[in-house]
Image (cartoon, rainbow over all chains, first blue to last red):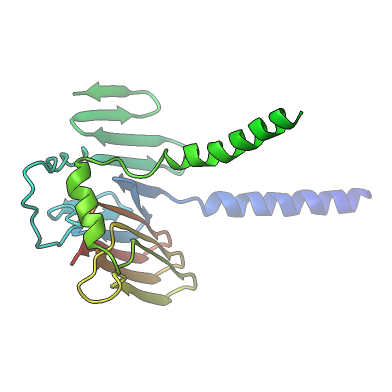
Length: 128
Length: 143
């Protein structure tokens, strides 16, 4: 490979690398009971699953969660059988908020029922 | 030799029969549930519906809307399946700068007499700068 071609390849790779670096953005994601909701910088995303709504903003200034939660059964029928087992309690709410900064820093906030976990590059906190 | 062959054939015949005795639903009250199974004659044994949607807007300033619905599935009027399974999944992506993506998926079907399973999963992303992603998933069972 000639010196000129090698220089051009190096210059091309440099331009490509600069382009990729310049396009890096923050992506903010939130997971509620396995449903994922993400917003890039300046983006907004709202997700409603069985009546429960979660909104996420890429700025991080608006994160809302409202609604009565899931009610998948609309049956109006009630069993008269006294031997029928009771309906099991609803599973605990799982929420996960993950934020990746452009410089590689990560913030993770996780709620598992009554437990709260906070993770950053330097910090790890668990509360019950 | 003949006895050995007969024994092997008997064993082969017995194994599938034994396999059929395992698996299936766990019964809480055998008498009641057997009655419900008998009363369900002429109706579908099970009902399964899977509703999947993928919606994305990629170009700058573009907009993509999607609406999907699955209703019924219980067979003739007055019928309910013994077991009902209903799945709803959706992916909604607003990728372009200033783009918007909207997705609405609704599934409504009969609940099973003996058991009902619903599974709902959504992936919603507003990735582009100034983009907006809106996703709505409803997974309901009943009569």
